Image 1 (cartoon, rainbow, N blue to C red):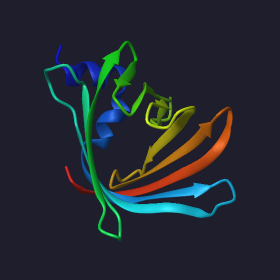
Image 2 (image 1 turned 135 degrees about the vertical axis):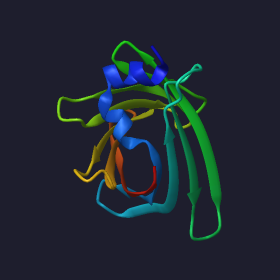
Image 3 (image 1 turned 90 degrees about the vertical axis):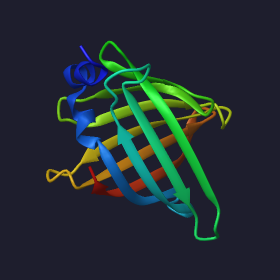
Length: 152
């Protein structure tokens, strides 16, 4: 069985996210005040072979000219995707309604983790991602990400 086939059997909703997406990340504090906003171009791929069942590539751009790029892979362990990177570690799973959930501990922000919910529109052309951040045991901020598929 290929990596892609294994992921399709365990988490078929993940494959709905394949392709290139453009969108905006908005980070809000608990009062709803905007902390940061930036554009994101995301490419989600599902290789047939290799150590990763899922690879995500992100290119972030701020209005002031700052940029950042990230690439990370996740490996299927049972019915969950597992990530171990220098910035975060955790796992993802699929609900019965094809919603993808993540629980990620932030290694680059001491004492912080977030849960993420990813929902895709019925036409599979747009998706929404919501992160609930916690730090030192309490809620800290939220991240809202709205994306549109630009290529498959």
